[in-house]
Image 1 (tube, helix red, strand yellow):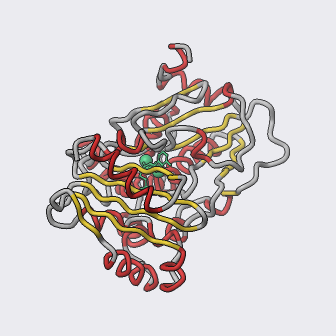
Image 2 (cartoon, rainbow, N blue to C red):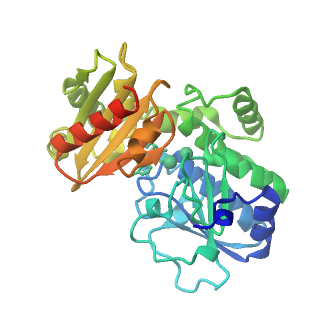
Length: 326
Ligand code: AMP
Ligand code: MN
Ligand code: MN
């Protein structure tokens, strides 16, 4: 890869490109969360207000707890048949385009815009707007909305505040800077309903999800003098509790929250694959550990997909974490 391809585009360059194009497809990552979806919806709504044509591509369905977001009814797993040749594909919240899933047809690099805040983003687009110091991809999008001079209304404010609350864990993670709190206050004044977002994202748990939490907690294991906690969920545990994959999303944070635990891992072995979620209290870099196994993410929150047996996954992740100082 040549040096210039790794270069970030400036806000002005991205804004000019957004103005130049007439048609957009906002792309979310597989197993979507409030950041990938909220960021895409916020920018998509703004572009539609500017008279642009906007479609949404997401391989997996909109999770139950994100259906309150505006315009989610337009999110589809197919591309419209009649896309104009100047269509720009806007990838939100993914360190590589492969995170969009295998259903997305191949897209030429010149038609890709990569908006993200992950460490180790591969700068896969012709335009890359990657700011790892941002707490969410949504707050990264905010710079573009300001550059475009778009009025941030209730719908857009709700999407952006959802990205913040998702990626800061409800203002609890270390990425909750004073600036993030100030922006959140501004978004609330613009009409974003923090109570509704809290309720949808952090409450409203299905009973089956809480029963699954109980099963996963039952299976917790500890190593490295109690600094590492891990557990797993498999097809049988989902079947026994009536829960599904969406119900597993934030359980790894419960494991990390145990006394003395610095790093937690949840091994999600269902639907024919093993996905691993890693969380750190900030001493061990779990992004670096995940990256050695083909995954990625952030210093304190990362993930990977492991090909092999569950026992091999346990051993490989343990080794990768020890290599990072666990
Ligand atoms: P999760 O544990 O699924 O909530 O993911 C935590 C973080 O790791 C998020 O920022 C994800 O984007 C990232 N991540 C999860 N799985 C992968 C993967 N297979 N490859 C790259 N990044 C990932
Ligand atoms: Mn995400
Ligand atoms: Mn994110």
